[in-house]
Image 1: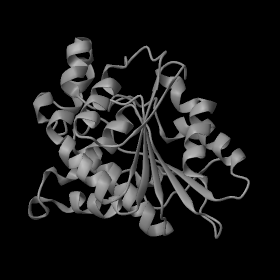
Image 2: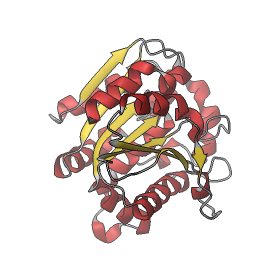
Image 3: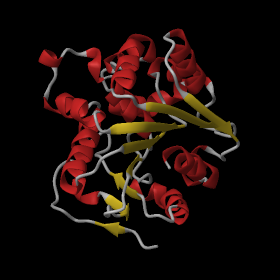
Length: 261
């Protein structure tokens, strides 16, 4: 299968770099939207990271019931968080509206998972306090059915406690310090639980035992938050290769497919 980049119109959020792996059709019942990682700053990570995963899912989708897209966003230090998060939300919103997409399954790897976590935390602000993109996030969550967090980063505080050297890239996205990251799990878990419950969104955490860049601490810490708030989730731990092998792993593709079809 050849991948197609749909050049809609160049704009600052890089929507024109949206990648289509499997187009929506009359038989489509589920939408998969991928968000790549790359520590907020690595140009080597792109929407095409998920090409193999999408191909495997398409090969299993004999009824053509799935459409698949991968989005782009601007990198740090050109822009800082939450502007890259806003790129993600605006690009997904535009994609959903232009294609008429429903039943969204969001798949994020590493920082891509961070963006999904930040979106799920939107209720930390009251509706009156929300800006345009936060209101877009609220609307998007109404269409989300499942989220798949692949070897994600959720707590920057714990990340730097475990890996102080990672300050080399967190400072690019958060130049004023990680205290400007407003979605620490201990702080926002109650709001995430409310969003998941209200919109009936299934939470899936995935982590590879062989991840050499992120230990299980991030995932285990998030699990603890979910347990403390009696929030439901599904967990998939396995040997899924190194950190940058996870989004190319056939077992991950099968896990996603089995849970959406």
